[in-house]
Image 1 (tube, rainbow, N blue to C red):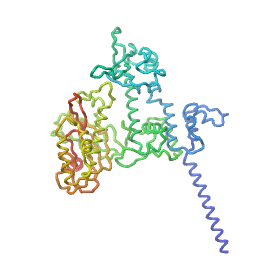
Image 2 (image 1 turned 120 degrees about the vertical axis):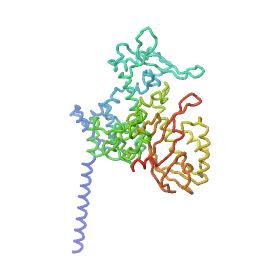
Image 3 (image 1 turned 30 degrees about the vertical axis):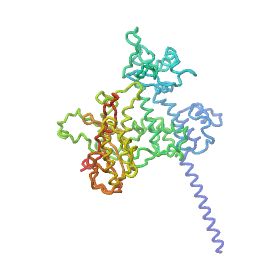
Image 4 (image 1 turned 90 degrees about the vertical axis):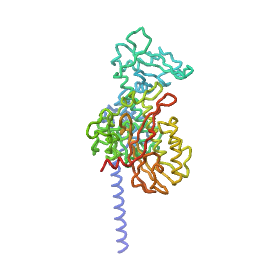
Length: 534
């Protein structure tokens, strides 16, 4: 009898396990979506006609439209991954919304152009030359008729230059000896005096100039996402990375947070995507206004639970807390700020700092033909990052001339102010004597916080770091480099966090150029953040 009862129990357990397994399989089937079902959903949403006599009508039409490509999948009945969902969605987005809203040939041509003084300069040996030809050998008259007019002349035929027409010529960059080092195809407008051989610039509000800026800014954003905004991008096959980055930069798939102040997100491309998630992706492709907002440097923007002073900014990043944005600005400590007597034109909130503001002549941001649109701006931010990396990572046991050079080169006065070398030597001497070790765990810079105070630019940063020293109760400029360093409640070996505004400035060098970087007199202080929330 006992044996019979035992057998019954075993059978019951087995039945439960089988039923549970079937339930799990059913749940998986209802939760995740297969490739073929994803394609069918897209075709139905697009209302594309299908061949009902075909064995795989939805696959066939997707192939025909370029949404699917031969070799994409070995098994259409397999579950769809997040990576493949993104790749297909990006193709659909390009099919519907084109490339930043422009046809592919216009996009590819303008992407390879430089805009300088509102004229286009074709600078690369792109796909628009006949096989074997280069910009140095291809006749400009043919380039104009076979490239410029079919692409720009046709698409922008209703632009505000249409009554005068386009003109193409050559522009040269020469070295000091007069030798040609670069040659450009110059594209602009026929002068009012037709007999003139000059090329006039486009109107700054022309559709061509607007298109170039949209494409240039879009490519810059895409590059930022690809380079530094997806923490697990290396898990995505190389051939699919750009499509994944593109779908992220468009705000269609957001990914998963890696924590506060962390400026990249996890994509989880190898994971299966749910049925509802995949269908939502397609809805966002079809309805761009519903997508997440993404910053110019490729970060997710938060639109709810905003800081009290959110109107000071163009956007609020999702990974930064409200207190980061609510900290006082440097100009708030100027006499007359709070009673309104200070000149309001002498300071500017982050929302007021745009491209035109930065490239105003008073900031000495004067571009040259062979410079990228954001070259000075990006260089200054890279130097700020270098400054923080060297400042918050130094060890008295290993500090050397390489470290000294690294920190020195982040300053705008590098190779200009001889005192910088002396100040760094004094710091190294003091920190060695005190056994100082500084280690950072996280450094985050938000370019969207850039503001102006009396023609001085400041950028807000966050740092998590640890200071170890024999004695922390000494002059702190011997612990962390900077004359007025103020670290409150500093304890040796304890991790701490800080939010700081760092000044960026320019210095006129011996080479007669303006060199941008961190201001030589910059320093780290906890006082401003603490004072902001008293």
